[in-house]
Length: 235
Image (cartoon, rainbow, N blue to C red; front, side, top):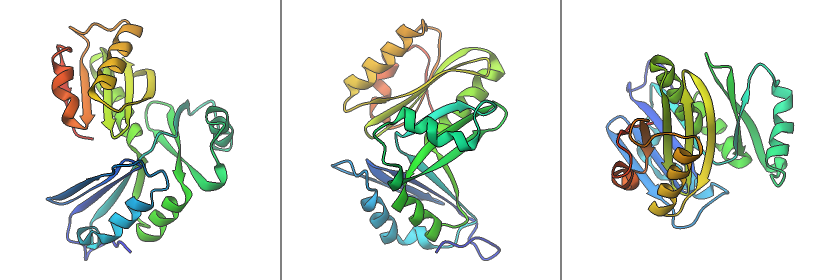
Protein backbone atom coordinates (compact mmCIF):
# COMPACT_ATOMS: atom_id res chain seq x y z
CA UNK A 1 0.00 0.00 0.00
CA UNK A 2 1.26 3.46 -0.86
CA UNK A 3 1.97 5.77 2.07
CA UNK A 4 2.30 9.53 2.37
CA UNK A 5 3.59 11.64 5.21
CA UNK A 6 6.79 12.84 6.87
CA UNK A 7 8.60 9.61 6.07
CA UNK A 8 8.19 10.01 2.32
CA UNK A 9 11.11 10.59 0.02
CA UNK A 10 9.56 13.80 -1.32
CA UNK A 11 8.89 12.45 -4.79
CA UNK A 12 5.58 12.72 -6.58
CA UNK A 13 4.22 9.56 -8.17
CA UNK A 14 2.05 9.82 -11.26
CA UNK A 15 0.36 6.75 -12.78
CA UNK A 16 -1.77 6.58 -15.91
CA UNK A 17 -4.07 3.61 -16.42
CA UNK A 18 -5.13 3.04 -20.02
CA UNK A 19 -6.59 0.12 -21.94
CA UNK A 20 -3.80 0.71 -24.47
CA UNK A 21 -0.88 0.75 -22.03
CA UNK A 22 0.52 1.69 -18.65
CA UNK A 23 2.68 4.67 -17.69
CA UNK A 24 4.20 5.94 -14.48
CA UNK A 25 6.63 8.64 -13.39
CA UNK A 26 8.33 8.64 -10.00
CA UNK A 27 10.81 11.43 -9.44
CA UNK A 28 13.37 11.10 -12.25
CA UNK A 29 12.25 7.57 -13.15
CA UNK A 30 9.53 6.92 -15.71
CA UNK A 31 8.32 3.98 -17.73
CA UNK A 32 5.80 3.46 -20.51
CA UNK A 33 4.43 0.06 -21.52
CA UNK A 34 2.34 -0.16 -24.69
CA UNK A 35 -0.01 -3.09 -25.16
CA UNK A 36 -0.32 -4.90 -28.48
CA UNK A 37 -4.01 -5.52 -27.81
CA UNK A 38 -6.50 -3.27 -26.05
CA UNK A 39 -7.17 -4.45 -22.49
CA UNK A 40 -10.52 -3.04 -21.36
CA UNK A 41 -10.37 -5.17 -18.20
CA UNK A 42 -7.22 -3.28 -17.09
CA UNK A 43 -5.87 -6.49 -15.59
CA UNK A 44 -2.60 -6.20 -17.48
CA UNK A 45 -2.17 -2.62 -16.24
CA UNK A 46 -2.72 -3.74 -12.68
CA UNK A 47 -0.25 -6.61 -13.11
CA UNK A 48 2.43 -4.30 -14.52
CA UNK A 49 1.79 -1.85 -11.70
CA UNK A 50 2.36 -4.52 -9.05
CA UNK A 51 5.68 -5.52 -10.62
CA UNK A 52 7.27 -2.05 -10.69
CA UNK A 53 9.31 -1.60 -7.50
CA UNK A 54 9.66 2.20 -7.92
CA UNK A 55 5.91 2.58 -7.57
CA UNK A 56 5.85 1.00 -4.13
CA UNK A 57 8.33 3.33 -2.49
CA UNK A 58 6.94 6.08 -0.24
CA UNK A 59 5.93 9.28 -2.04
CA UNK A 60 4.87 12.73 -0.94
CA UNK A 61 1.84 12.60 -3.22
CA UNK A 62 0.24 10.23 -5.71
CA UNK A 63 -1.79 11.20 -8.76
CA UNK A 64 -3.79 8.62 -10.72
CA UNK A 65 -4.77 9.49 -14.29
CA UNK A 66 -7.61 7.55 -15.88
CA UNK A 67 -7.36 7.30 -19.66
CA UNK A 68 -10.58 5.66 -20.82
CA UNK A 69 -13.11 6.83 -23.41
CA UNK A 70 -16.28 6.61 -21.27
CA UNK A 71 -16.50 10.30 -20.42
CA UNK A 72 -18.95 13.21 -20.77
CA UNK A 73 -18.73 16.91 -19.91
CA UNK A 74 -21.86 18.49 -18.41
CA UNK A 75 -22.77 21.90 -16.90
CA UNK A 76 -22.31 21.55 -13.13
CA UNK A 77 -25.10 24.00 -12.26
CA UNK A 78 -27.75 22.13 -14.25
CA UNK A 79 -27.21 18.49 -13.30
CA UNK A 80 -26.82 16.99 -9.84
CA UNK A 81 -24.55 14.10 -8.96
CA UNK A 82 -27.62 11.87 -8.67
CA UNK A 83 -28.44 12.53 -12.33
CA UNK A 84 -24.97 11.69 -13.62
CA UNK A 85 -25.61 7.97 -14.00
CA UNK A 86 -28.79 8.65 -15.99
CA UNK A 87 -26.81 10.94 -18.29
CA UNK A 88 -24.16 8.28 -18.81
CA UNK A 89 -26.80 5.62 -19.45
CA UNK A 90 -28.23 7.85 -22.17
CA UNK A 91 -24.81 8.59 -23.66
CA UNK A 92 -23.56 5.00 -23.44
CA UNK A 93 -26.60 2.68 -23.65
CA UNK A 94 -24.39 -0.41 -23.97
CA UNK A 95 -22.36 0.29 -20.83
CA UNK A 96 -22.66 -2.35 -18.08
CA UNK A 97 -22.98 -0.25 -14.92
CA UNK A 98 -22.61 -3.32 -12.72
CA UNK A 99 -18.96 -3.51 -13.81
CA UNK A 100 -17.92 0.12 -13.45
CA UNK A 101 -18.11 3.06 -11.03
CA UNK A 102 -18.96 6.66 -11.84
CA UNK A 103 -16.54 9.44 -10.93
CA UNK A 104 -16.82 13.19 -11.40
CA UNK A 105 -14.13 15.82 -11.91
CA UNK A 106 -15.33 19.37 -11.23
CA UNK A 107 -13.44 21.96 -13.28
CA UNK A 108 -13.27 24.72 -10.71
CA UNK A 109 -14.03 28.18 -12.03
CA UNK A 110 -15.75 27.01 -15.21
CA UNK A 111 -19.04 25.40 -14.03
CA UNK A 112 -18.21 22.21 -15.90
CA UNK A 113 -17.94 18.64 -14.65
CA UNK A 114 -16.47 15.63 -16.38
CA UNK A 115 -18.39 12.47 -15.53
CA UNK A 116 -16.51 9.29 -16.36
CA UNK A 117 -16.56 5.57 -15.70
CA UNK A 118 -13.80 3.54 -14.09
CA UNK A 119 -13.68 -0.23 -14.45
CA UNK A 120 -14.91 -1.63 -11.12
CA UNK A 121 -11.91 -3.92 -10.53
CA UNK A 122 -9.48 -1.10 -11.37
CA UNK A 123 -11.32 1.29 -9.05
CA UNK A 124 -11.06 -1.24 -6.21
CA UNK A 125 -7.37 -1.80 -6.99
CA UNK A 126 -6.68 1.95 -6.78
CA UNK A 127 -8.65 2.35 -3.55
CA UNK A 128 -6.87 -0.55 -1.86
CA UNK A 129 -3.33 0.25 -2.99
CA UNK A 130 -3.36 4.05 -3.33
CA UNK A 131 -5.88 5.22 -0.71
CA UNK A 132 -4.46 8.77 -0.56
CA UNK A 133 -4.16 9.28 -4.30
CA UNK A 134 -5.79 12.07 -6.26
CA UNK A 135 -7.70 10.45 -9.12
CA UNK A 136 -8.69 12.38 -12.23
CA UNK A 137 -9.40 11.79 -15.90
CA UNK A 138 -6.78 12.85 -18.43
CA UNK A 139 -9.50 14.61 -20.50
CA UNK A 140 -10.35 16.77 -17.49
CA UNK A 141 -6.76 18.03 -17.33
CA UNK A 142 -6.73 18.80 -21.06
CA UNK A 143 -10.01 20.74 -21.00
CA UNK A 144 -9.10 22.66 -17.85
CA UNK A 145 -5.76 23.78 -19.30
CA UNK A 146 -7.47 24.73 -22.57
CA UNK A 147 -10.08 26.83 -20.75
CA UNK A 148 -7.47 28.61 -18.64
CA UNK A 149 -5.37 29.41 -21.69
CA UNK A 150 -8.22 30.78 -23.78
CA UNK A 151 -9.59 32.82 -20.88
CA UNK A 152 -6.32 34.70 -20.54
CA UNK A 153 -6.02 35.69 -24.21
CA UNK A 154 -9.62 35.41 -25.52
CA UNK A 155 -8.48 33.50 -28.60
CA UNK A 156 -9.97 30.37 -30.09
CA UNK A 157 -7.67 27.40 -29.55
CA UNK A 158 -7.63 23.68 -30.32
CA UNK A 159 -6.17 21.30 -27.74
CA UNK A 160 -5.44 17.62 -28.39
CA UNK A 161 -4.27 14.70 -26.32
CA UNK A 162 -3.31 11.62 -28.33
CA UNK A 163 -3.16 8.45 -26.28
CA UNK A 164 -3.14 4.95 -27.70
CA UNK A 165 -6.28 4.43 -29.77
CA UNK A 166 -8.03 7.65 -28.72
CA UNK A 167 -7.59 11.33 -29.56
CA UNK A 168 -9.19 13.76 -27.11
CA UNK A 169 -10.00 17.21 -28.50
CA UNK A 170 -11.26 20.50 -27.07
CA UNK A 171 -12.03 23.82 -28.75
CA UNK A 172 -12.18 26.87 -26.47
CA UNK A 173 -12.64 30.64 -26.74
CA UNK A 174 -12.56 33.24 -24.00
CA UNK A 175 -12.76 30.66 -21.23
CA UNK A 176 -15.76 28.95 -22.84
CA UNK A 177 -15.77 25.33 -23.96
CA UNK A 178 -17.06 25.20 -27.55
CA UNK A 179 -16.43 21.48 -28.09
CA UNK A 180 -15.06 18.44 -26.26
CA UNK A 181 -14.98 15.13 -28.07
CA UNK A 182 -12.94 11.97 -28.53
CA UNK A 183 -12.03 10.22 -31.76
CA UNK A 184 -10.83 6.65 -32.49
CA UNK A 185 -7.40 6.55 -34.11
CA UNK A 186 -5.07 3.85 -35.38
CA UNK A 187 -2.62 5.82 -37.53
CA UNK A 188 -1.19 9.26 -38.31
CA UNK A 189 -3.74 9.47 -41.12
CA UNK A 190 -6.58 9.25 -38.59
CA UNK A 191 -5.05 12.04 -36.48
CA UNK A 192 -4.65 14.30 -39.52
CA UNK A 193 -8.17 13.52 -40.75
CA UNK A 194 -9.91 14.26 -37.45
CA UNK A 195 -7.81 17.36 -36.77
CA UNK A 196 -8.54 18.72 -40.25
CA UNK A 197 -12.25 17.97 -39.75
CA UNK A 198 -12.29 19.96 -36.50
CA UNK A 199 -10.60 22.96 -38.13
CA UNK A 200 -13.07 22.81 -40.99
CA UNK A 201 -16.23 22.20 -38.94
CA UNK A 202 -15.52 25.02 -36.46
CA UNK A 203 -14.21 27.38 -39.15
CA UNK A 204 -10.76 27.58 -37.56
CA UNK A 205 -7.86 29.01 -39.54
CA UNK A 206 -4.87 26.67 -39.80
CA UNK A 207 -2.69 29.77 -40.12
CA UNK A 208 -3.82 31.68 -37.02
CA UNK A 209 -5.66 29.37 -34.59
CA UNK A 210 -3.08 27.67 -32.36
CA UNK A 211 -2.95 23.93 -31.77
CA UNK A 212 -1.72 22.53 -28.47
CA UNK A 213 -0.89 18.83 -28.48
CA UNK A 214 0.14 16.39 -25.75
CA UNK A 215 0.59 12.64 -25.53
CA UNK A 216 2.04 10.45 -28.26
CA UNK A 217 4.66 12.56 -30.06
CA UNK A 218 4.75 10.36 -33.17
CA UNK A 219 2.16 12.62 -34.80
CA UNK A 220 3.60 16.00 -33.84
CA UNK A 221 5.74 16.55 -36.94
CA UNK A 222 2.91 15.65 -39.31
CA UNK A 223 0.65 18.19 -37.61
CA UNK A 224 3.35 20.88 -37.62
CA UNK A 225 3.61 20.54 -41.40
CA UNK A 226 -0.05 21.54 -41.73
CA UNK A 227 -0.74 23.83 -38.75
CA UNK A 228 1.21 27.09 -38.58
CA UNK A 229 1.02 27.46 -34.80
CA UNK A 230 1.55 24.00 -33.31
CA UNK A 231 2.78 23.69 -29.72
CA UNK A 232 3.63 20.62 -27.68
CA UNK A 233 3.00 20.27 -23.98
CA UNK A 234 3.04 17.61 -21.26
CA UNK A 235 -0.13 16.61 -19.41
